[in-house]
Image (cartoon, rainbow, N blue to C red):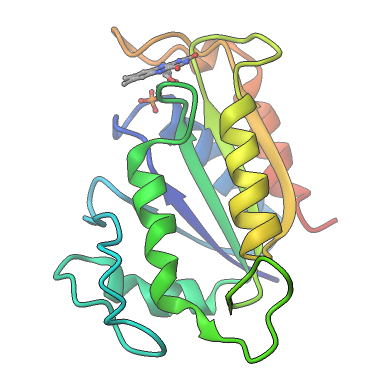
Length: 193
Ligand SMILES: Cc1cc2nc3c(=O)[nH]c(=O)nc-3n(C[C@H](O)[C@H](O)[C@H](O)COP(=O)(O)O)c2cc1C
């Protein structure tokens, strides 16, 4: 049994991304995992100010909801980042949330080349939705995920589900006309097989 924290960075509370999260969570729960969804619509997390007041081990000076989420982040085995594709990358809500990892970094006396601090060891996964569905659609989002979260921060990738072709945000979510919800359920159910 793993503790799974899902960060929902979509703009529509009942949109495609929220639906994808629901299916993933259902699968993960059925596999016996403990899950929690944090919606960045309900929790305000602003981008990092770069003031460095947090280094090392001190809470962020910003008065928003991030510090309250830190214990959940630290307790989780797996962090799942869920986002619609906005202008070919992750939503600004998810990006702001990731920026705030700056204040959970720890001093690393012997950092490897190109890294300056260490981060808690976690697994991570990516769930995304988009309107387009070309081979390049998620290129920038995946590149950021792999470079920043996996290569730099050092999280262990458990996989990605890139749900292209879910329609635009004009009107009702279209994801139930695709097979992405069943794929998300299976992804959640088998993420630790
Ligand atoms: C501000 C904005 C930017 C978007 N940019 C893209 C894009 O670059 N490529 C794309 O395929 N879809 C884009 N879309 C469509 C959304 O990614 C797609 O409709 C997504 O499923 C919406 O998720 P939601 O229903 O959870 O809000 C954009 C939508 C919005 C509102």
